[in-house]
Amino acid sequence: MRNVNLPPLDPDKGEWDEKALNRRRFLEASFWVAASGGVIATVGAGIRFLIGNSLEPKKESWVEIGSTESLTPGSMHRVRYRLRAKDAWRTVEQSGAVYAITEDGESYTVFDATCSHLGCLVRWQEGDRVFACPCHKAYFDHQGQVLSGPPPKPLRRLETKIENGVLWALI
Amino acid sequence: MSKLGKWIDERTGISGPVRSFLSYPVPKYVHGNLLYTLGGLTAIGFLLQVVTGILLMFYYDPSPEGAYNSVDYITFEVPLGWLVRGVHHYGASAMVILAALHMLRTYFMSTYKKPREINWLTGVLLLFLTLAFGFTGYLLPWDQKGYWATKVGSEIAGSVPVIGSWLASLMRGGEVLGQATLTRFYATHVVLLPTLVAILIVIHILQLRFHGMAPAITERAKRNSRKFVPFFPHWVVTDTILGLGLLALLVYLSWSQGVPLDFPADPSASDFVPRPEWYFLFYFQALKYFPGSLEAVATILIPLFIFGTMIVLPFVDKGDERRPWKKPVTTGVGIFYTVLIIVLTILAW
Ligand code: HEM
Ligand code: FES
Image 1 (cartoon, chains in turn cyan, yellow):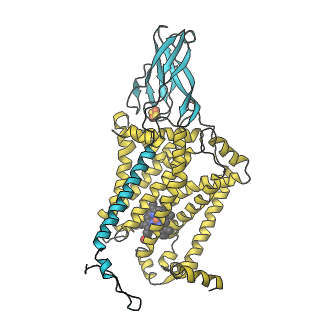
Image 2: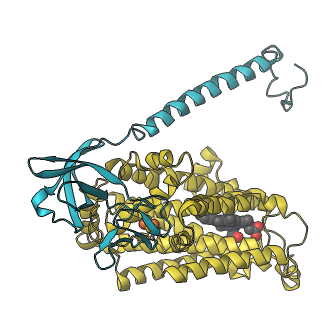
Image 3: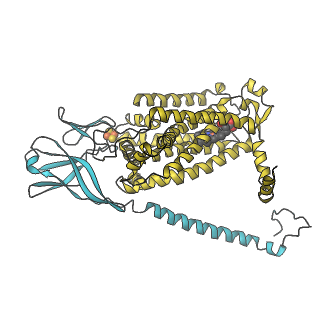
């Protein structure tokens, strides 16, 4: 290996070990293999660690909306639900808002109050019978369909069940 | 050199590099123009954030149950807590303003041209990282403002076509905003971002030292460009005095305005209208103009386009001309974006 660009050494100091220099290519290659292997393995494991469990779908749970008697037909009821659920390594009380309505006292519709645009909470306006989202001025009708504004899809409808006169929704 | 200085220098060899750093010749046209202090002031702003941030960490509790109360405690019960938190709070806004003004200075003077491309590119990254500081810091008090701004912010990531829901989950550490989100934001805010920003500032400044300031562009400045003053003390004194002025302003704001803390985060409260921090208001306002299927255009395409044009700028605008009044296109585009951002911010205020 003659063509390596090493600075000449001061003869008083000593000289490059020519024999060792012959292995320079090989050592360089070894360095790159070892270092990139180490870096790739570390970064790969690190990325997997950081992703963690974040891509697991949220566990759905049944939350109590209220007794069917309290839900008078024809009017929209705002319900603030609570549940104890696991949040990463803690078990905490979570809360949220839904709207429940029944026309006939038999079939119930429950909407997640979370706007389908960017997640603000919508409010029911009894006068106009619309849901209004304050964030980007969107309106939904009483079926949860978009009337105007940026939301790309209707409000989410939750699965419901009635047990012993109590309405439950799957959130 | 003192005896101690000698002792240290014999062991570290530090005096040479330090002396050449401090005796760096600063051209008079730079020394005489306060616009050139904006970068240094941004650096001082960053230092203030680091110092007050480390102090805050001694009391802050990064959990949804504890965060709000710990911030409340810092603000109202820890001696000088209002001051430390206040300076950190207003300092964040100051850093955004200073970095933005500094960028406008370098942009309108076309200092991004060869050979200063890397200076510009590290600058663009620093600006976006400064905004990332703002975004991650906003959540930490776990109050209504931070909670809802983050909710909307992560949904914005969620509106990216195809990989959106994925991105949003990665950002939150799960499908819902909770403990995992707070821990992620906290680690990013106090370790990851400061490290990256510190490294980039070092590269940014070493690049500047390597090339020197971009040459003067006005006739008056050119006449002044063959006279120099040393970086220390001449230039450093200017920056120090302005830095103290900045600190005084932040102290005054903390004292006269107090530091805001909203009600504790409540995921079921719909009487709260989410709003981002003021420097994201223009973006928040812009989203209102893009309904339904055009949503992704506003949320992701436009920001990507702006970031992309900033990145390619030094490789596209390559001529020798650097006088802004002779460069109607870049000057016009710069003014257009500046005015647009100001107007959108005012509309959303
Ligand atoms: C954390 C944020 C930042 C810090 C601490 C910082 C620091 C500095 C300092 C101290 C200087 C020299 C003095 C001056 O020109 O004002 C400088 C120069 C420069 N900065 Fe920044 N900067 C930051 C952000 C940015 C941004 C956002 C950009 C543009 C996108 C940028 C682009 C430049 C360029 C091109 C120069 C060279 C100026 C010339 O040659 O005249 N910097 N920076
Ligand atoms: S979040 Fe409801 S309209 Fe944007």
